[in-house]
Length: 173
Image 1 (cartoon, rainbow, N blue to C red):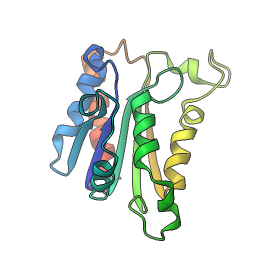
Image 2 (cartoon, one colour):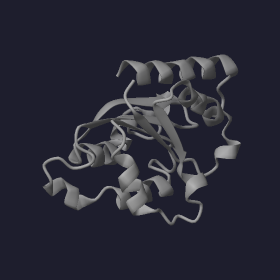
Image 3 (spheres, helix red, strand yellow):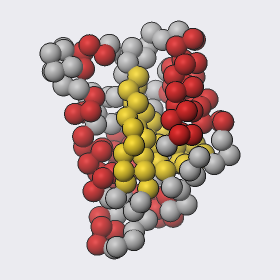
């Protein structure tokens, strides 16, 4: 497994039984560091230089969050805005180059709703385009998007299976 930083952002984490169960996947490796942005930065004052220094240590980034109004949680968006330095793009070997990423996104609605013909007339891949583009522009290859639908209604066996999927994905990529 690559040395991995899991960047978790859930503004209502304490009410999310699904995400409480899923983050257990991150306990399985000594090469993985779990950071809860809402716990670390409840005042939204991000220690930008500390985060830029931290990010250099990892080969992979995991972005784990709930879909909020068809986008990223506000603190995760702010973290990306402040930590990803646009001046890095001018450097041939900047801190984000040659990293990879996995996106894990949970949503309460059914998968059928996130189809071209569905209720929202769009897909999760399209909704994740601003994030994937931000990562790719900075030299980070998005390896996989794990979309977890009906997250408010998942039972223990389903959560165990999804946790296993996350662990396998982290190990194989």
